[in-house]
Image 1 (tube, rainbow, N blue to C red):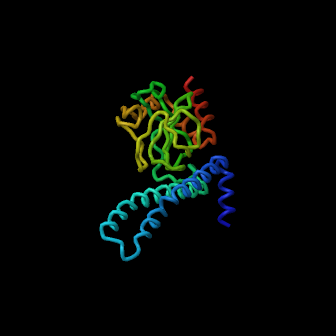
Image 2 (cartoon, one colour):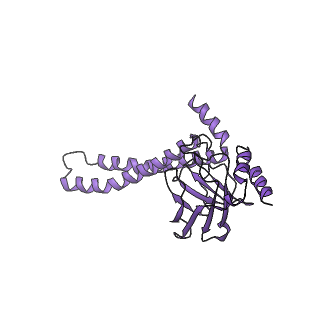
Image 3 (cartoon, rainbow, N blue to C red):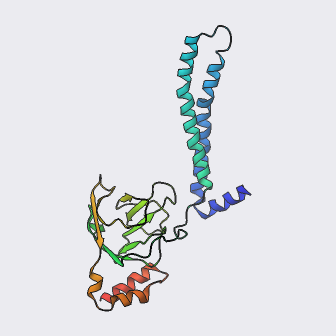
Length: 234
């Protein structure tokens, strides 16, 4: 039964990638096996009345690094095998813990000028948090919840994805809470450069825009929502 479930998960998320992880894990496991067994073979030679205390101490100290190295490599191999059968976390399955935040944010400081500009909050949540897409662009701010390993935190990226991949071309900010990373913070981008994010205030400057946002809230396609908002501002 476990094997059937594992195969089903492999089909759903990159069967080629998962097979590669299994092969690599098996290789690492058997590669570390001689290192793990070597200490037992060495210490087995100490049996008998001729085994002195000095020899025992030396052989034990000599064997421990082999044992630890072998166990480490085998542990990595088993982790790779188990990871191949473990399904990724669906970004849409994590419930919200906070109500929706601001309708828009603005990034006014970033080492890559492509990430500067206004971002609109999308109707659906990713990993239980709001996410924002830059107007007329693929640049986005979203929360990564260790869906495929790695560390949790806020990510800036310029590629389209459901939020399951650990992508951060524009940097990432390690965080395990639910609040937005507002303010001027040192992100992991270009050797720790500063990124400044603030709430976008300009939405309130046009009469009726709040009502317009409510009218398009809940649209299934975030791309369609951005297109509609662009039409409003024309």
